[in-house]
Amino acid sequence: MNLRITEIFLSIQGESSHAGRPCAFVRLTGCPMRCVWCDSVYTFTGGERKTFDEIFALLKEFGCNLVEVTGGDPLAQKNVFPFIALLCDEDFEVLIETGGYVSTEKVDERAKIILDVKCPASGESERNHWANLERLRADKDEVKFVIADLNDWEFAKEIIEKYDLEIRAKEILISPIFGIENLAEIAETVSRSGLKVRLNLQLHKYIWGKDTRGV
Ligand code: SF4
Image (cartoon, rainbow, N blue to C red; front, side, top):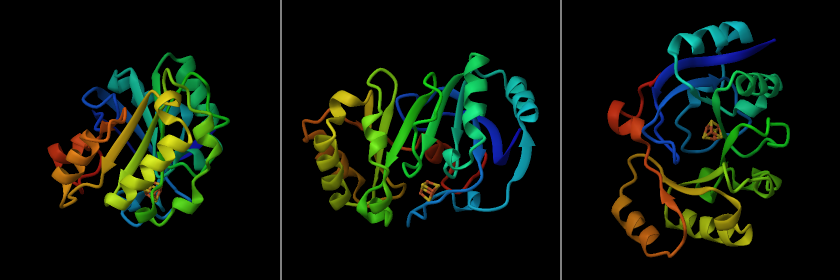
């Protein structure tokens, strides 16, 4: 079996409650969404087919137990589901970063899901697969709202309440888009909210810049 891959690299996890940990990334090609602020447009096309054996050989060279399968939207390729199961069989700690359009139902239960909920400024909020929120597991899964403005923050609050996310998810990540002008205002607003959320800044972009790939 194989997957279409944009890049595989070793870096520091830049987001989520795992931020700062060494992590191997497997970035799959393709995404059914078109978020206005997307920072990985280069994954939409191209890529290279790699067999599972080729991918595992690279991961073993890295010697890093934490692996994130990302994209694009990794769940858009059907072969990703057996690939995730194999990663779990090999005792990798597996994170799945998904855009929230594709169902998470077939993801191996040992993997940890980081589920995006698209807010209005993304232009894709109508395409969220809401049933994914009901599958979140409080001991391992995280939910992420990328926010571009305070209207997105209001939307995030509504969804947090509607789906009981403070109980249902291990972490609620509030992730302002990189370079946003009113970051301090957003941080203050989040801090006053009384909600059990985590401000999620993209560590890798502060280290290597916003356009550097493979880091
Ligand atoms: S889901 Fe992710 S990869 Fe797809 S368009 Fe949105 S931000 Fe880009």
